[in-house]
Length: 108
Image (cartoon, rainbow, N blue to C red; front, side):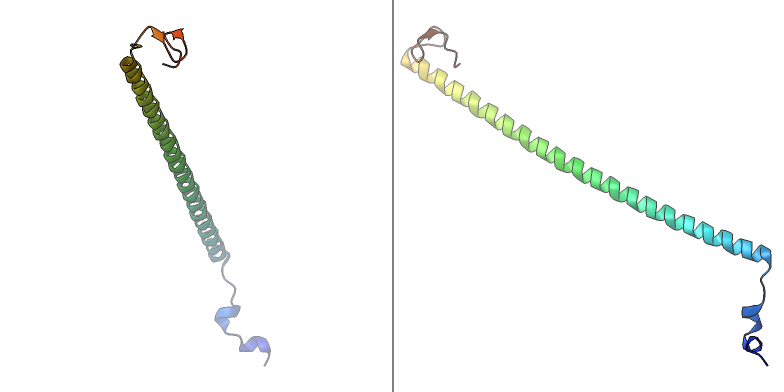
């Protein structure tokens, strides 16, 4: 009796070539599916990152625009206040301006 006699026949039997080809094709298909899943997950992660970056840039842009709108409103209010002060001082809306001694002050 030899060592090979102790191995079960199911482990030592040769499989038919058609069966081996089918198993190989199945294993190749499984690997291809796993690669496709990994690629899809990476693409989704890249898309999520791009959307997050876009949202962050959009938020920053909106904050900048809001700041600019605020500054514009602040400057407009200041100009209006200065015009009102000039009217009260007698300079009027147009005409000789006492602040810089010019006709139609450049600061308006």
